[in-house]
Amino acid sequence: MATLIENKDKVWKQRKDEDFMGFMNRTDTELEKLMKENDVIQIPYADGYAFYEVVSKKPLKLKHLPAGDAWEVPYSQIRGLRLADIEEMLDYKKSIKNYFKPLSSIY
Image (cartoon, rainbow, N blue to C red; front, side, top):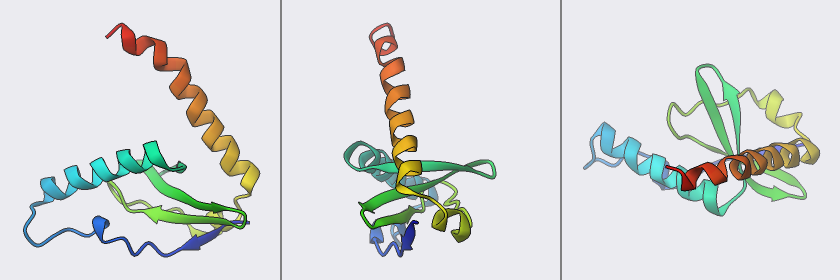
């Protein structure tokens, strides 16, 4: 079962010297970077997604990434996730990415 750890990364806090759009652009860029470099899952929620970084697989630990609307799913849903669920999500994300990869050369 998954454990949720607190996200203390300052990158997700709006700086005093930046406007809202600057904040959104910066955090969107950070999310894209994390999604390329780390295992990140996205869980559909409300009108968007809740994003979680897989910090550890054994034991399974997730960290909320407050990007976009900063949606979070209820902790009971996180707690019920198994490693097999996470691996299935990551495999699906990879397969979709590979499926559409040949189209990128057309555009």
